[in-house]
Length: 413
Image (cartoon, rainbow, N blue to C red; front, side, top):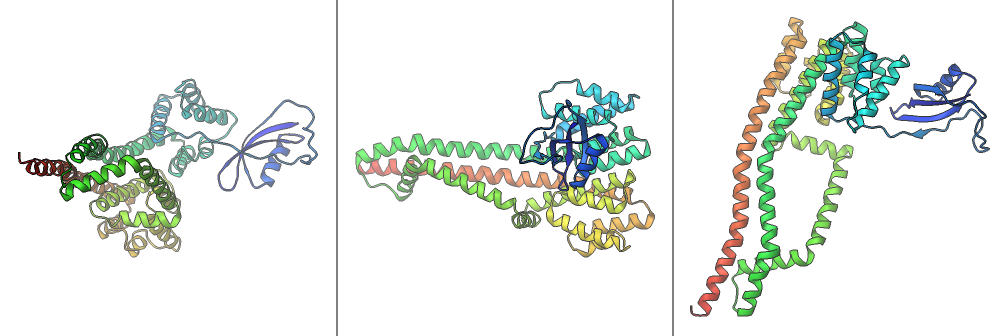
């Protein structure tokens, strides 16, 4: 018989292919012998195996499978709707079937249908979600697994919705705070380009016809305008290549480490990055511990979701020390990255036996600090950008006015 299968390799990549086996159990054993984890397997039309002398009988034909990906907003919508359906008393299979009937035209359609198919075949929801790691983070999968084990999946889904709503709210606050400064910067740059490409060349022709000696600022301005007219596309190309190379470097372990370390030290930015990261750390760890995830497993998940490699490294070191039987607050304080106030509050939570409660207080404190840092950043950034744009536009205006006065004086007007 010919079986079509989906399996995950040790790196978590989804593989698909076909194989020949006597029955379903034999096919599963063949998949496991290759070190892969079966996700789904189904028999196709019976018939002779494909004749291919280069591929011996029973050998896999593995192919990489592109996976659709749900964005944070889509995951939040899916979680909210699934939580509502489960809370109303609907079974998991019926709820996923209901959600799979919708057609949004996005990747969520394929993912929800795949979840439904796997549930129908007997797979746990957590395992089905684990087959889509780009959409469902380890935090999400672990909490769903805990909800399945405790029989409180509806309550866990509700907590997940609350958690992702807080994370989404933090991101939106930062983005909305940057909207006005970005608009000011874009309008300033657009004004400069318009002046350099259309306005300055017309004045340059008039000044050349009059033949008078122009002031230094005017000559500099005309030179920049000519450079943009003749080499503007080349400059844009070089800039684009530089940006691409920079992003590729920042994607390397060394570049990412330096960039994240710079974020924790740069003025104005460090307050936003640090408070956001600490709030995310505390909120995520509190959510996991509240839902019964063991401390070591919870720290491992937080390490993957904290968002800063410097802080993630400290969490990893703390996790190794916690394995030896020490508390969480002590190893976190030893690294010197986490603020003393945060580790002291963690220590109090450990002493009172209410770690989730202490972590909620920490998350609330740093979310409040994040709002304050965002206001400080935008309050300082807006006048800086306005002054910068004013200086650039003022330089153009003064250079033209100086040239006009110089020409009129030379003509004796």
